[in-house]
Length: 271
Ligand SMILES: Nc1ncnc2c1ncn2[C@@H]1O[C@H](COP(=O)(O)OP(=O)(O)OP(=O)(O)O)[C@@H](O)[C@H]1O
Ligand SMILES: [Mg+2]
Image (tube, rainbow, N blue to C red):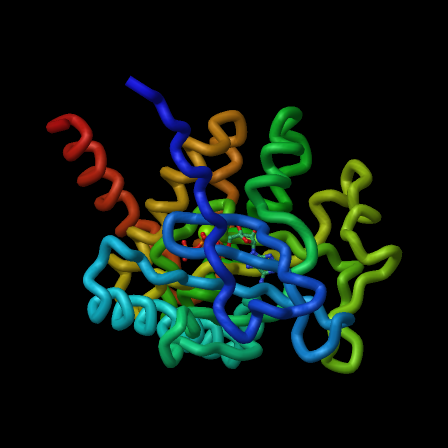
């Protein structure tokens, strides 16, 4: 029997109008649902992030289109709401949720956030575990602010939070980097933990003021933290401590978190 090599996987095509963008967008990550590119908005000096949700050939096309449209609009609406309420998230620049055939649509462009994901920072820093307390507090405060305005993230992990160095400051509404602009200048010991938490990836977010929903959000983060950063697990107490101080009603959510944990434990005992 003759063995033939399987065809190499084809890269997912970019949707128009990005097919001929110059320079071409750079692919950063490819998740289960979305591809994340770095590109520019209007002029090459204005970097932005492009999130593309390509069509899923295994889903029914009508259902797929509806789902993609819903996710993009829902993410954009949540980002706009957070922004309006002063929660630190990337601003929405443009989107085409639906498209008009030929693989168009299914994308959202947002402000580029300088810095690194909290996951990367903790992995690098967590080996020594020192100095993480301040960062943990910032996470607690950021999540608290988001919950205070009635947004539940739905996928809180350290990959869905970025640490933007203070050096990426805002001037005349435009974000600029000091130094050479690649974010590397902030990478000295100690300074690496400086900056502001920016929450990202609101594709599964919902608007809710229910304590239960907020408690589950915290539980998801706690679990994600435990599995991604077991060495820094103790630090999570600081996330919850600062969360508890961050808005009126936060303590009730923490109490509810105890019930959620209990249910989680029972479930895992039952297998
Ligand atoms: N606005 C942004 N600026 C800079 N980098 C970003 C931005 N948005 C996302 N990223 C980077 O791209 C990665 C993936 O983005 P995101 O978490 O939104 O997508 P995803 O997890 O693939 O999406 P989904 O879970 O909705 O399918 C992030 O972890 C981060 O490193
Ligand atoms: Mg993500």
